[in-house]
Length: 285
Image (cartoon, rainbow, N blue to C red; front, top):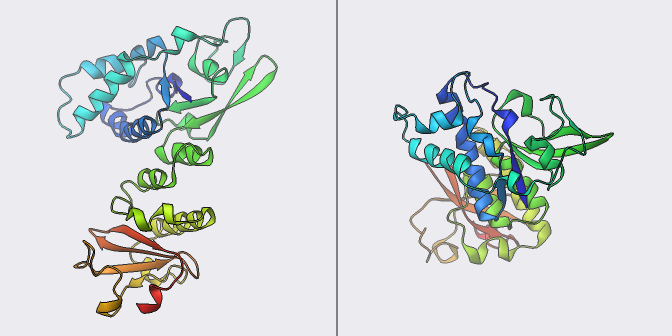
């Protein structure tokens, strides 16, 4: 599957280089997800010349050695170098041509731009952060017909699409979806993870974890649906007695009447360790 970079989402609208670099944090996450799922990212030959601010192009920012004040700068420059210099370019295998007219609100051109090319590929585009491109769809008129492009501008939207299309497994979906949030899947025990669940149970657990992530830490203990509480079994009934986490204060929260998530909190992050599907463990603590 192929995504095409939407060069119109640059057009010099960033107020500063720092604003642009801030936007690249999400693009780096999207790139990581794309590598995991073997997606291709196509761009126009002349993407390098796209204005980022009113004065500076992508290429000029890449070459600017004065941008050294941020710890992430090496990642940013690597990403920019990849976007500018590395194939694939859609121009090498162009699918749209001048025999058709492609109309949109962002240019007077009728062909030769990336949104037109996306119409003839998988109809998915990657946009940089831009007020004009904050909707999930972009409408293009091809001759007399309307074409709808899926507009990806944040990593969670891409993950939702991939998961819906069954192009990513449940663990990878959650691992990346909850990255830098209140929930971490990094320590999930494989034996008690997604492979132990039925499809409908997986949906319920994911929904519960998303609710958990939306709430503040002040609200989580008071939420009736989650019933977040400390796991306090007797020592011989302790599910984590012989695990690497027997010294941790384990908590659990509810996904439904039978299903529970177990984990521990550290630095305001809930590390999910195990899923319970029959409530037998919860009966003892």
